[in-house]
Amino acid sequence: MRQGWLFGIRDILSKHPYDISGGQQQKVALALVLLADPEILLLDEPTKGLDPLWKLQLAEMLSKLLERGSTIIIVSHDIEFTARYASKCALLFDGQIVAADLPRSFFSDNYFYTTVIQRALGDKLPGVIGLEDVNIC
Image (cartoon, rainbow, N blue to C red; front, side):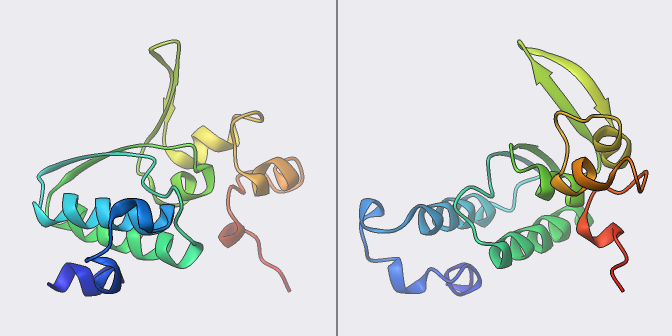
């Protein structure tokens, strides 16, 4: 099972889902969904419980799906992940989309719902939304 190896879950495949951590549960759920090689993928909080390295791996997997033509819709409160990897962002409020834009514009024009970096440095470095945008020398 290549997906078990890819997700680092081979050791837990024989365990009951309640006997593994939340991050491991998330990896199992993602592996099962990705086994279907979906054309349209709807994910609700896919980064929940994942450490930063696994978030990078998830981003790479989703990128490969996009390259193959899949459509991916993610609902997330993980602002940094969304700002870095989304191609378009939208804010839902009271069942309605109240704002939608490309990530850079979406997070740069919003002080309340934005990245930590933009909130801290946005007034000094306009357009900065992620650490990768900051040149630290």
